Amino acid sequence: MSILNDIPILSIILLSPLLGLLVVLLLPKHRSSWMKAAVIITTLVPLVLSLWLYANFDKQQGGAAFEEQYDWVEVPLNKELQDANGVSSILFKFQYELGIDGLSLPLILLTVLVTAMAALASVHIKKRWKSFFVWFLLLETGMLGVFLARDLFLFFIFFEITLIAMYFLIGIWGYFNRERAANQFLIYNGIGSAIMLFAFVLLVNTAGFHIDQAGEQASFIYSGSYGDILHNLTDPAAWVNLSSSQLGMSNPFQMTDTLQWAIFIMLLVAFGIKLPVFPFHTWMLKVHTEAPTSIVMIHSGILLKMGAYGLLRFGILLFPEQAREWAFVLAVLGLINILYGALLAFRQKDFKLVLAYSSISHMGIVLLGLAAFNEIGLQGAIFQLVSHGLISALLFLIVGSIYERTGTTMLSELGGLARSMPFMSGVLLTAGLASLGLPGLSGFVGEILSFLGLFETMRWLTAVALLGVILTAVYVLRAVLKITFGPEPDTFGALKDARLIEAVPMIVLLAFILLLGCYPSVLTDTLQSSLGGLYDQLFATRAGG
Image (cartoon, rainbow, N blue to C red; front, side, top):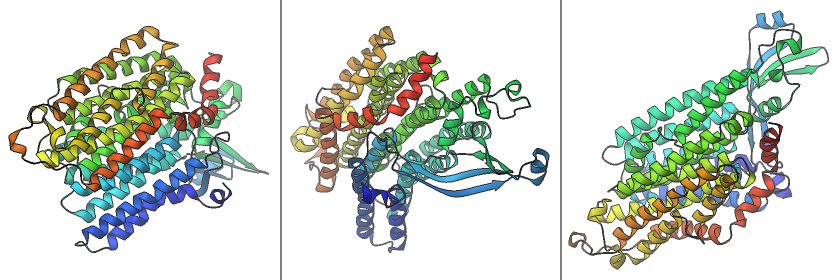
């Protein structure tokens, strides 16, 4: 622990992909094997460091020892404002501020694990290796930054980095309709980012305001620090919570109830597009079917989780009262996601679309856990994020390998693969069982915790949502059994089973799925003991209401 305290471990994890990016840029274009090796080694560095960090994470401290903060950007406002207010300076202050807690650490570990496995899966890429790996490593930096950032401006920058990198990765290396998929991705997520930025500006200009008093000198500071904003929102004496009559003067920094509701709804829409929440899901279907294998692994396994993380971190935790009042709305949205995704998945003829609608359904379970507003539900939501990230990444890895051999992902054209590819078919069957929530696999734990949490507050809605579990079993088994059993088409010839570079990520992802399923306390102990501050913040408001 002392060693970790002496080094900027969070910055090393964050910036290590950029070092690999520089190495790739310096390598000759024709040295594709060198670039592959460099990228694989680069993605293993943050993976090892994150595992080390997780092992040394102080659950009682909640990760407070792992925080980094440096002055970064200060934007002074004009002199006339200073003279009018009688202060020494007025400025916007944004910091390079990183931190972890029980919410972000599991998602960081998921990010580095899935990205490392996706680097191995990049064997399917056939052109422009250097450009691909540059955007790939930039994407990893952006994802890590999203989960590590504790400044709104810094968070927004990393969020946009993931958007730009994904746009090029889909548009250049995707399948037949890749340009259309990339454009839809950019339009929908661009709108979400614009809404999020507007909400962040309102937060900085109200809850981010504080006065730095040093003797007779006073500075008006607008801060983007998440900690400062959270403190001001929860401090009854902060300017943001005082009316003009309470302050005895005009208060432009007060956040009225109307403004709080407006910001909360904007954040719900912004991150709901990313999650995605119905009806903001159509762009995601295109990405899941057109993105290359390694990129769709990252998209389904990590990027969708950024939406849930942002909704919880900025929407629910900053505005717990509004979130509590809208708990039923969140639960209904989750129910729609579950049933709509499951019903549409059952009707699909393309296995990629089956998995795409399955992701919509499983993200609905996350919404149910968040809507429960209790400890069990919150643990279930986060566990479901990690579990689904592992399962979906594994399933899309297998789909990519099948497509490379057969040239199709249409269920009507597949069958009997268990004869020629027993290993890959066995992994596919196990991943499918994990997706439908079989006990002993990670999918079961996240689902049961989310449903148990919601059952305490909304029993009838929970009962209806359980229909999604039955539908999931139907569409998953229908698709998986159709692919693995039955007659094998004669046109396939002799198909080869998984190569070593494909088998390794399959085994690793499957091992973590089994680990969390058989020994869930590896994750739940961290969640239960280190999320105490989040519970207190949420449930104190609930008790007060």
